[in-house]
Amino acid sequence: METLFHPGIPELDVESCDLGGRGNGSSSARLGRRQRGPARRRAFALFIKSREVPKINNPELDEENIRWECCGQQFDKEVCIHKHVGNEHMSEVLQQTEAIFKLFGQSKSKLAKKHDSTDNTITFSKKEFDISTWLPDTSHINFDLACAAGEVLLYYSYCDIEEPQMICAWQRALCHQLHFTGKVRISKEGINGTVGGSKMAADLYIQTMLSHPLFKSMSKEDFKRSAGGAHCFQDLRVGVFKEVVPMGVDPEKITYKDAEEFHRKVEALSSSAQIRKDSILLDCRNYYESKIGSFQHCLAPNIRKFSYFPDYIDTNLECFKGKQVLMYCTGGIRCERGSAYLRSKDVCKEVYQLKGGIHKYLERFPSGFYRGKLFVFDNRYAISVNDDIISECRYCGAPWDEYKLCSTASCSQLVLSCLRCREKGLIACCPLCQEKEKVSSETHTQHLKEQCECTEKRPHRGFFSFHWHNSDAHVEKWQLQTPKMIKSLEANLYTCTNEASKHT
Image: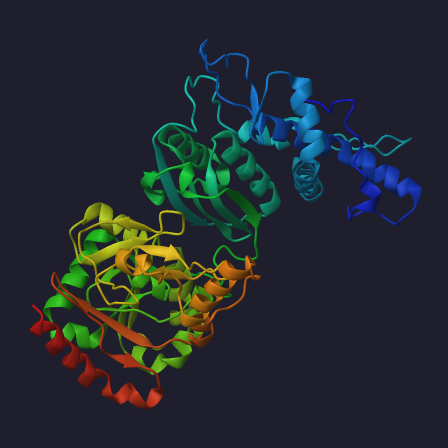
């Protein structure tokens, strides 16, 4: 049965919103309201459905009649959840209303239009545009999805999405229904998400995604799974963006290497100096990711954001001429963008990408050529894949690879500070933040978020940083900062090889 508006909920003030009506007259405003009525009722029903909870028959908990949960409150009557949504969430309902209405207006082939000669009212085909039909049935589940052992999913798909707002509304409702937290980016070029919840919820999420016609090209292998859950994220953020990965370069068809092929390539690179001379193993991640874990013999850009990657390539373009480039990142999506940009320069002999990223490689080769931890963008910060520690405490230099946020409230930098140094109060990312922390603790004041000293000093274009490490040591010696040093690339490269061999 369709959920309707409760009589006590006030009408939306469509005149005060930019709803795309014709003119500003009262007649056009009334027409806009009539046209949006079905879309608004559908959006409200969808929001109510997204707050439904699985049936729990436990007399001791007295939760048999609980049907909805929202904002930490539980509701057993329809009228109560209606009032709550009407008072607290109408702005979100309005956003979904606009998404549904835009789809109605632009997909004329899927609309059933009936024009009345008196009021020009439009009637819509509910079967075609009921987002709730895209949601899984969870009524048979007899346990709380939010409390079960969990997983984190990482995935992406490049595909044409004509109505990203509609997919956004569907994803938000789907994640709420499955008690997911995390981040989902949607654009007209595709979708990119990392979400966490129970294992049962993860299975349902994957099934629902694969059953949607827009994502029929995906498979279960495209979802990277790791131990975690809803606790790994602060909240749920689903939004529409210009790009699924912020870089400003369109993806293109590239050549993939699966985990087995990539492993053989890295193995050959590690055992042959000539192959190292003709090839580059390029890490597309940010410096704080490759700092705690990377492939042996990789080239790791010293960049803070992936949006700086094009500048990094332009600055060091000479070094890629005539080379075979093997690219990798966490899950593969950044390589799609990075390889497109590198190919557009037409200087490389070949450009390959690790299919599925480091996640898929580690599933196949947990003891392979990747050493250290795998950085992830959630509250875990990293996934432990082996016992190697390739990074060190920024204060004392002791082996350490556990990140913490800078102690200064105005900073968001990640800090590698060992337990001994933390006990000494060394918990900031730079001297400036350390001083700010002392001032704020004495005056009980907090600064607004701003760039700190180490962020301001970090170059946008980055420089070369080769990572050489084995079971006993991690050597990071050679850095290239200017084009004048390019000619000494090979000499320095072999110097690093000799230095690394001394530690074996």
